[in-house]
Structures are given as C-alpha cells and as structure tokens.
Image 1 (cartoon, rainbow, N blue to C red):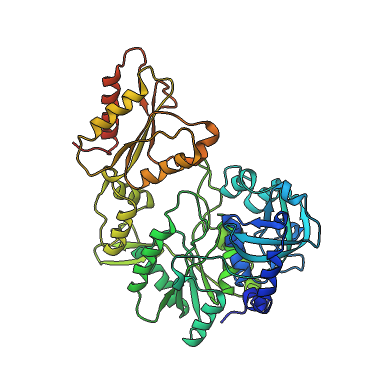
Image 2: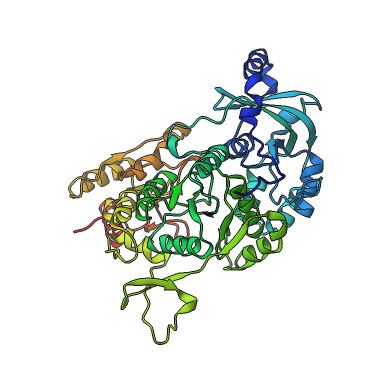
Length: 513
C-alpha cells in the first residue's frame, strides 16, 4: 500500500479527539466576530484536511505556502502540492482579525467543525492565481469563482478538529482515508487502482477500469466526486444511484465504491496531480488519468482550456515524487460484430465496424425518450437516468411574460392556464406571482425540476435573477434578441399570443398532440 503524501496520514479527527470537549467549551464563549460559517466549497476542503485526504496539510494555507503553491506547485518546504487550499473571507471579517486569533469554523451556523489559529491574513493576487494555476482564461470555472464568488482575503492557519462535516446521505459509502486503508489491509488489497469520475458510468467505463486493473494486477476503487463539480453536471444523488448499480457488475472481490467529498476546480493538469496525491492518501497504488482529465472543455470561442494529454504528461513528469503509478485512460469502443469492447487504438476502424454514443447523443436520446441500447449501458442505469432526465413531454417549464407586452399580462396568464389544463400528460400547471421575493423566486427552479408548467405574469429585478435557475425558462415579449416567443405588440391580440406560446411548446417537444 502507498505511503501517504509527506509520509504521515494527517487524521486530525483522531489526533484531536482528546481535546474535543475543551474546543466545544471554548466555542460556547466565543465572540460572534470570531465565528465563520463555512461555504459549500470550504466544507469540502475542510473535510479532506481533517480526515487526511489532503495530507500533509493540517490547515488552510498561510501566505508563504500559498505563494509557493501558486508559483512553484510546491509547499514552502518543497513538497509537491498543486492546488491552493485557502479560507477566503469577506473584508469585514478579515479586518477584525490578528495573527494568533482563534476562529471557530461552523457548518450551517450550527455545527462546530474546527478551530483555526490565525497565522496570516492576506489579500491574494487573484490574477496571478488565475494565470498560474488555471491558465488565466476569464471563462474558466475556477477563474469565474475567484473573481465573482471567492472572498477578497485569505486566512491561513492550522486547524484543531472537532467533527467532520455532517452528511445525511450515503453514510456507508463516505469512507475516510483511514477507513479505506484499513479495509484494503484486511482484504490484503496491496495493489489498488483508483478511478476518478464526476459523471455517470456506463459499460465502457466498467470495461476500461477492468482493463486498467488487469494491466497492473490490481483491485479497483471507484472513487467518484460528490462535492462541487462543473456547473451543469448531473447531481450526485443520480450519479451515486448509478454507481451502486455499476459496482454490482464487477466480479465479487474485485472492486469497491467509496465517495470523495471533493470540491473540484476543473484545473486540468494541475488538478490531475492533486487527484493523484489524494488517491495516494486514500491508499491507492495506481491512478487512472483520463484524456482531458479534470478539464472543463472549451470556452465560448471554442478554444479548449487544456490539451487532451496535458494531464497525463504533467502527472507522469512528477512520477518519482508522487509514488503512485499512473495508468493512462484507454478509450474503448464497441465492436457489434463481436459483441465486445476493445481499446480503439487496437482496432483498424477502416475494416472493423465500431459503435459509440457520445455524451451529446446520450443527452439527446434522454431528452427525446429515444432508445438507449444495452451494449452502451445497463438497463438499471438507463432507468435511473430517465428518472432524473425525463423526456421533453415530461419536463417542466416556465413561461415568463415580459413587462412591455401590450396585452394584459394577468389575463394572458389566466388564458394560458385554462388552455394548458385542457392538455393531457399529467403535468401540474400553476400561475406563480413572486412579488420579487427571493424565497418565492427560489421555488421556480424546484417547480420546473419537478415537471410543473409555470406561468409567471411578472418579471423580477436583475439583482434577484440569481435566485432563478435558467432551465426551461422562456420569456414572451417583443424583443427578438431577448425573447423565446416573439410577439408583435401592434397586431397580436391576446388569443394570438396564447396560440404562439402553445405552438412554441409543441415545436420544442413540451406538448404532444
């Protein structure tokens, strides 16, 4: 089994168990100005610091370590580390602190997770971080996060652990590095190849992991990310249901499943090195590095953020320091005449017939309700995906009536509701008046996700648009650039507008006649 990065598994939960009650008592007397409610990303990071997944880290990076990681991909002591792990805070919070202060880090303003002793309070050079760590493209998800979400100050310091973040789902699958290492030891799994994924798995993934394990005579750790991933990714509940089905398709005693509470940065090659370090800490001896590993694709101009093999090349360049063997991802394809999968680089595609379904094609088939063949995915997996990705006639939608419509919007809403209620399909329809309140706007996405058809007679303010998810959201108005359903204010009467909306929904598959 591999040695943890830096030589020691930094299990802060076990280390600090004797002082837990004292830390809780200290928190009970804490000033409100010294309490920080952790963000979703910070919760992921602190869990992996506390459980040892981020060994050798024992806290959030101080300024010296941060600068070294950004510029050199190393901690100040020279140890390889490629992604900055930082506690970003608002200026108002940072300005009230000094080195040596004790900060109480909490989850949901309820649970004390850890206590941080401040070593440095610093304003990072976000442009340098964006350029060095993520190559600087302003459209990169991590750069967008840096510029638009992350706090302006970072606080570095060591942590004393009270508790891992609280979870309510899949507790039996949320294994810590210490737990996984113990399982591997008890089963005599001395060679383990880890597979990173943030997507559902299909037959090809099962095949490539088996081939990877066979090539190095190892067992398989399916280790999917269930923290923050790329915006637009399939939710982790759907994916975990898929993984639980996929794991049944491996021979008994060959593979195991464990969930990783990681907040991905989609940092391509530097993130791939980081992933390898994390898997080494979890006990893996081998790690599958895929094509465009941890890459977010391309920007709005079609330019890829990373090259297809950048990740494999960077991880390979550090192989002597990582002490975990890289297994390159080999793309497999289906051979229908032989009813088997094979690596595409071993096939002469000019003489051998192959089949494949791209991610885009899969999403299209799910949206349209088209068949997904068993050679591509298991029926149990397809069933789960269809439950979470129903075809268009079963999907929800929201029709938003623009303020500059000449017809009476309240009457148009009533007319649309009466019209929609005539149609079959089992969809729930509702007029929703939000009064520009955040708590009501936040419900729109939930209604649409559940399959409802919403009619919204009033728009919301620009600053409140953040509360509304854009999925299947269609605006009705006279602006040809902004509106999905175009209305002529000079000639279209109310019944014309109703017909245009109905035909638009039919054209886009939401209503079938």
